[in-house]
Length: 172
Image 1 (tube, rainbow, N blue to C red):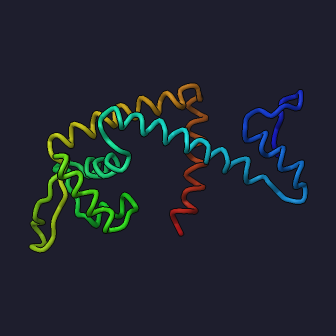
Image 2 (cartoon, rainbow, N blue to C red):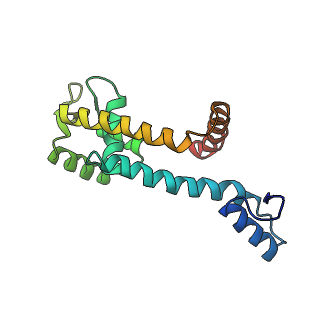
Image 3 (spheres, rainbow, N blue to C red):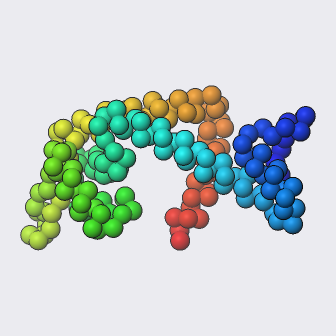
């Protein structure tokens, strides 16, 4: 399970935690901790790094998420509020509030839908496009730094394994 160094010391904090639980609760199978505790710790590190990258561009994480969804849609960089809900996994009330705030900051604008007289589309403004492009480039630099020492083959293998795990969650 936990693989200590040859001298018996834990290799990382998760190994220390797992060894302690193995000692205290030998009746339990604590193997899930060896994977999911590392994913949880990695998520915290990644969240801090992402927040820093976005903050350098005057953005909160949620702002980047909405702007990035619009940017990925391709020119003219607009989506319906419903499509934004699907991509950002928030409620309609939350999305309305987020769009209102992004409009106030001049990063998006609401436009009438050409297909539905009652509908609206949310579109990036030129300022929003510049901001999301700059923040995304910075984010990629930060993320490259986080995995920089990991060999490419290991990155691909890790991405594949994580995809398999996430598929289980996304399917439910």
